[in-house]
Image 1 (cartoon, rainbow, N blue to C red):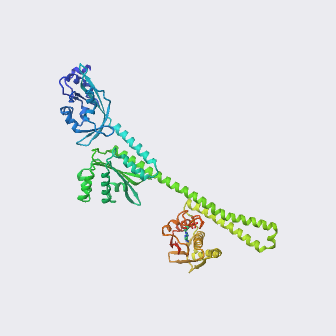
Image 2 (cartoon, rainbow, N blue to C red):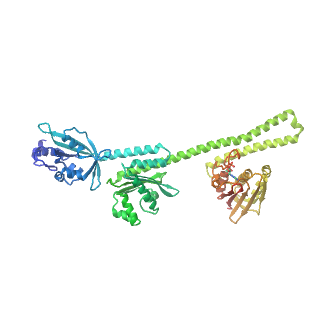
Length: 560
Ligand code: ADP
């Protein structure tokens, strides 16, 4: 401190006590430029020295102003909390403890300036200076600002905790609720999660430490749902996918956003002073919003808070995406397993019959019986061929499924007469119809010319006719063709078991069935293939049905 004697008084810090003026003035030469706040207090707790950084940290305009304030006055300006959020009394501060003869550990404190709500973190250390008798007469306090590190730590902690919760279960609604709970009160006084379903947003969770306030917020939300056209808040974030930050919500701002006086009073009761709304992005689309609000803790959100909230929103979105992907993979695996089981069963039946026929033909040939009765021989060959045909149809069906599922159906369009095609296809089913005990009546009508793929149309007619015979056995079936200038329709009316209203849309899905496998074997693919083929022609298919009375499937096809 060789140059200290050239300085007559401390330039930037102020020394209050005469007794220590000299030594503190010397010390100030070193201390005034420190970024750490340094204060020295006497045995009564009064400050006798403070550097500029201490004044800055304590929100005083100058070190002089800080020194002029009484210990009570200084304490009254702030709320001081420990790491766990518990208030810290003056007696717990390291300076006081050093003066009481203890050797206090460093204390991490969160300090909130009551007037502005500004919050910061300090690592507070204190050492006693002893008098000649070894009694503490001064305490040197060092305030090290750790706000940035603490925020980083808090951010990592919240991200880690939220990520752990989000990956703990595939029930993303439950995990989002628990994330909302976890963010309160550390990151927000209020936390809300909204999700969009079928274009409508719904509040999934509201969290606050006080359950009475949660109920108030729920009632508030019911009474004042977000206006979808609003240019700010949840509705806007859901529409635009862009996060919003409101550092300080003033009364005029809140009044401007209120619908009426009652709404304004309810908003004021929520007590929100700072707010962030961030999107929950799923595959790049805002499918939800996370709202974090300050009400009472005085904190003001800034860009760092917004970045953390956005990251939380992103992770929530990823969790939703993963849960959905897992769900659909599960369903696909389940559908595949069911399909394989049913397909195996379906293929096995005609295969067993085919093998049986061939076996008995072999025996009959060996015994020379067939040579004696060529007619019986021809019938048996026909039967064998019939089983092979059924097998071939099944295999074709399966191949069709994979072809159709792979991409758009390729059509070979030709100018054809739909009425003739329907009638010819029905003719080929005459034998099957008689086996099923069905009277097949075709109302052919006038020729109906259009551009379609004849093979695909045949497949459509065959599928619907087969179903009518299967689910309407022993009953009459009417097939009708009609057309206008632009559209042709074909309907298949049976008088069979019918389909329950809840199942009517579902049965067009892949592997979807509305009957038991035992009573009606099948793969649940016919209607799916049919609909894909109709749609490929730019048409549509619908069913009208009544349980126990029958069903009518109607196919509409544009003629060009
Ligand atoms: P599958 O007949 O092999 O089960 P489909 O895709 O052709 O597959 O039909 C799906 C389901 O729709 C059937 O399982 C059945 O429940 C129902 N269904 C189809 N056609 C009819 C019909 N004409 N009458 C009653 N139910 C039908």
